[in-house]
Length: 414
Image (cartoon, rainbow, N blue to C red):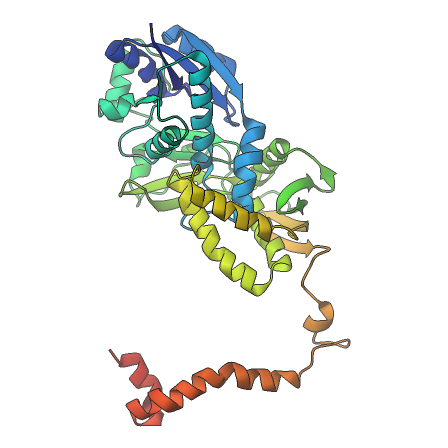
């Protein structure tokens, strides 16, 4: 019998998919569970897949690859979607898609499958990545093809004896990996209602963290990649896990946002990203010390485009290769150490140093030792304002007439 490789998380959607694919397509299902730092019992998930009906249940520990090839490049790029979302789920999808393709080819499967619905972003990320890497493979998406609502999926699971945690009383849809945790559905779909504490799992409420004394942590970067905490070099997975625990304990990393989905709708998203919040803050602080003003200005646009590219499922694109080359160039001198202060519900940068720092105390100080040439400022100001004054005298003042009403005229002119 022909086979399909299913990206299996152990949750409601993919558990239902195992049984549905067998009924609809008559295919044997190989469940592929990929560990990207989900804090789950992976062996138990694989065992659950076999009990539901998968002919094989494979496990891949992809945490190190996830951090090295996806998280760190996104951090170097400063990729945060719409100013809020550090792209945790979005970054994992191209890695999962690649592993789906590799396992499908190794197992001689004719198709791959995922548990995405027809109104989310992940279907696009999976389908586009898979079609780019392996256009020969058929893509099956049970929830999209059946147009299942979440209530339908829960009912289907109950009817077929499929064990799932989601219920109509607690319908949250959660996805998590090392870089962050996302939560949606249920009461969270009302943007007016404050998320209940039960919606959070990684972060303490600021109120609960109020009794904690402030603490400090030093993060060392090399070429834009964090390599050490408090002077001790550690691997990327451990570094992120450590910061998730520390920052989460202080209530850092809660994100409540209205997000513009790729499929054209707005959604209310609740994220927890303690380590991502801290590391993006620290990375920006180090860049402010080591990038020139023009580099920083131009990189803002690149960061925004890089984030959209990840969000929109275009990781395996030529544009990504182009942007990644630029980002890597900007990180040549982004090396140094940032000191972070943690307190109830917040973290802040309180110290920064780098061998490649562009900050000069002699030029910046207002005290003795000032090396800045104050007289040079007069000529600079004259030349800097020359285009403005020239245009004003040639165009703006004559067309407006009364110089005294210039501000009012410009402000109201259509």
